[in-house]
Structures are given as C-alpha cells and as structure tokens.
Image (tube, rainbow, N blue to C red):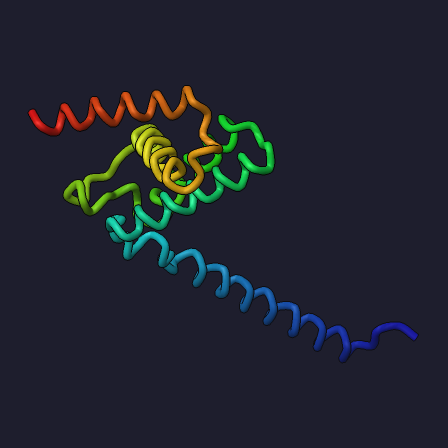
Length: 146
C-alpha cells in the first residue's frame, strides 16, 4: 500500500501550483506600498493636546500607584514622542509642519506633560520638578516677549 503512480503525479502537480502561488503572493506583498508610509499629517494642536493629556493622566495614575516618578515621566514622554513620530512623522503643524527630532520631541513632551499634570494632580508632582517647570516656563515667557 504505497502511493501509486497517479497519486504521485497529482501530488507533484499540486505542490508546483502551491509553490508558484506562494511565490506570486510574496512578490505582490513586496511591491505593495505601506499605507503607513503615506498620509502622514502634521500633528495639530488638538492632537498634541490629546497626547499631552494622555501622558499627564498616565503620570498621575503612576504616581498614585507609587511608581517611581522619573521612570513614569520618562515612559509618558517616550510614548508622546513615539506617537508623534509614528503617526505624524515628527511634524508639528503649529511649527509650520517642521519635523522635530526625537530628542526635541521628548523634551517638549516632558515639559508639556508636567504642565498638564500640574493641573490634573498637582499633589503628585515632586516640588523640585514643579520648581524646574515654573523656572523654565518663566524663561520661555521672557524669550517669547523679545
């Protein structure tokens, strides 16, 4: 009871057909452009507000759960940065669609998240972070008046 002559022919025919169809399927996927590479729209003020509030919310929840503040802030800022880079290519509409690098986005995200968290849960923000934020805010206000 082995495979007879006709079964071998049918098996050979089916395997060749399967190989050809998988090869064509792979070629089709390689040449297909990714939608993520297209349609990157600069982050609007509304987008930034959402990402900032999400980061601040995370920071407040993590602080209440007694997670290390600096680690929580780092995670919230990194998430803020990754979303803007991934969804908007790092571009900010308010800056004339200028693309910011990862470090600038991270620093801006940190500053904005702390500012929002001070409105949401001021008791969760360490005094030294609050003082640094207020100094930086005053410095930015002075620079914008020049």
